[in-house]
Amino acid sequence: MTEPSATVMQGRSLWADARDRLRRNRAAMTSLIVLGIITLACLLGPALTGHPYDRVYPDYVKVAASVTAHPTPDKIVPAIERVASRLRAKAEDIRVEGDIARLKLVAPRAIDERSLAFFERSDLFHAAKVLAREDEGKVMRIEVPIQRLHFWFGTDGNGRDLFTRTLIAGRVSLAIGLLATFVAILIGVTYGAVAGYVGGRTDTLMMRAVDVLYSLPFIFFVIMLVVFFGRNFVLMFLAVGAVEWLDMARIVRGQTLSLKRREFVQAADALGVGPGGILARHIIPNTLGPVVVYTTLLVPKVILLESFLSFLGLGVQEPMTSWGVLISDGARNIQGASYLLIFPAIFLTTTLFCLNFIGDGLRDALDPRDR
Image (tube, rainbow, N blue to C red):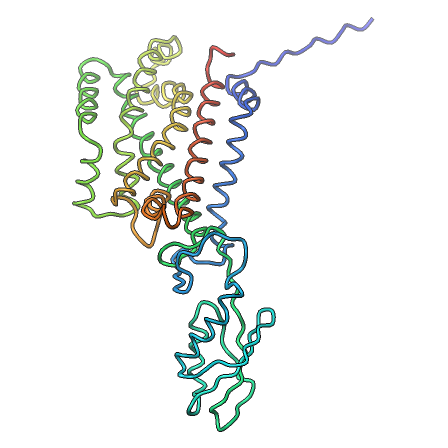
């Protein structure tokens, strides 16, 4: 008789259980997919829109959002007549066939062919082509290709494509959120772990320093940095990250105080592992659960802070933009051009909702009481 094969039971780690619980959280997974789509759109979208984020279209100032191509049929003939007046000529026999406009220019004297460059300088047309000359150059038949442009989200008060600028603004807001959060985590985890592990008078002094920094107004701190160092992108995430680490330090300190009394830490200390090795190998890795959850909640907080500072004029400056800058501009034009506020606000609120749902999902997935 053959003996029955023994069933091998494989254990599951906390991270494997957390991953499965996170996958079962539909709100968190949906938010993760939506956030990924928004991030990809912000990274790749500006290269596909056909509009540089700082390109100004003087003929398309505050154009409403539309899926139709510009110029619309009712704008072509007036635009041709306007350009013809710059040539000191009169446009006659205008015929528009698809993307080509054919017309006759009539002037009291010979028309200089070089002056046709006025058509190309317009946002509505490409370079004009001469078909025929009559009456010693006083009459000229030309063909003008029409430049078709799409402004899905409309244009702003300077004639710049709002769709491209919204995606570029997403790059800036997400970058500031991630970089400032990274700075906050780097400082806060290190500071809190050292304070909690060393303990005693050192812990007291380090945490009293945190309390003093808590008492300083955040806006005053940022204004002082702007006055001394000027306004730039790097300063933004350094300023925000240099303040937001305070909460992280307290969280990690509390976790460290409970971890340093655990048996595996005492065993490492008995084996001669130094304080640096214990912090790097045993303390900090075991605080990653709360740190990861707090990170997902800190990113939207930082994005909101950047938007608030940009709304006050202390954030990123033109021609670069962020969601806060676009929302500030839209708020000033809400009566005449509400779309300037609606589209950036949709992107910002969607991103914030996604990050908060992901944070809630990670909090539930990493809760050891749910194992």
